[in-house]
Length: 195
Length: 380
Image (cartoon, rainbow over all chains, first blue to last red; front, top):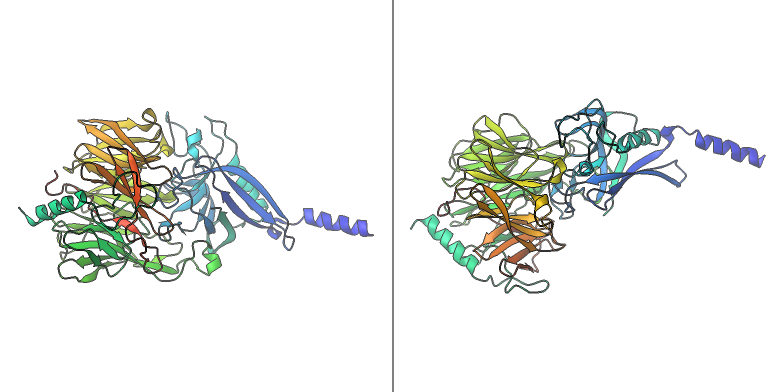
């Protein structure tokens, strides 16, 4: 009887719908080109944490107060929204827009911050020029950003892993909000950037 | 000799003398480390010729611009200082998310303003509410960014327009064609250089030639400095869109006069930062390892010198006389100046008023006060 009960509980656990999970991002800054973005989740009320991680880049310098250059400041962030086909001038495709953040100097605000890759609004690749296309992931240096977190994805010209796709799928499967667009109020699924 | 010339000479004379309030924080290798000619410590303005210190009504701060633009700019006639102020409308703990603090999208968080301090009369007044970043042209014309909404709000892009007044009290004319996020950088002759901040904090340098006359001077780039005659701009490009490089551009038409691939020079340079200085044929810029000095020879750029300041991210380097370059770096106590001696190649820290306390809940920031616009009298 006890074994049957445990088996049933285990099955329920495995079959728990994604909405039962509670997830959040963490970002562990190591270098501008090679840091770690992780999606963590729990199945409340259990405190056990599960996670998947991907390589992520951020900034071109490690000075978190340098607007347009430094990596993402430390602290907790709310998510402003999530889009599958965001169509901004410099950022497109699958993106998570996160809140502005005051950096370590206590006053400078970093703004316009996203988790994103280099892809078109339709989640494709636009690789036409000889060196660097803004919506084509063709090289290591594409991990650099003006401050955002960037994830790799495959392209016709380079064989990078599909980290954006994996992170996107994991987010939706394990506790990320189903909705797309701007969130009101901000999403409970937050981002924590380690100092 | 005009009043401006007198002030300029006084500033240079002051810069050439040691500033007594400086304190060496570690290793006084170069003699007498010192702050720039004119600077702020919290609400206090220091280094003005003939004045020990001036108390401002608010602490100069540029939270939405960082050091893309000076925190305070002296007027061309030397009679006043315009500075950026910031009033918090509610607490925002950097360690916590907005949601965890009960901050909802649209909630007002702060209000920037540009203030004017009259150095003769001692008056200090709000010049433009809901505005930040300014540039003062040699003839007295002033440019600034003004938000469409006075308040900076959670989750709302702080868009607005750039306005220009021929004189302080003249009518404001809108120079930008549509609201966006702009930061005013400086004048290059009669052309106003501004940043447009886009998604992902991308930076485009725009050239505004007049009302409604806007063009992109450099995309995904930062302005290091304007040539003394105001005709050329020294531009930096980071590594995110190709090998990092610096370009020399003609302001009038954006033509590229020269370029230097930074991967071909001393690797300690790495990348260079915006908001540097140009004196004679030398350009100073922050670099990955400290400071880099570039020489402009005709239409050629060459690396002239590197100054190591390891472990210190230097911002806003300024030439002080012919021998020194100063910048500043943040610290837990609110920032310190970094003073580099070109002859020895060494840098030391200077912390004027080390016991200073900040204002309005902020640390006692130490920032240089300068006018990056060119030309300036006696320089071109």
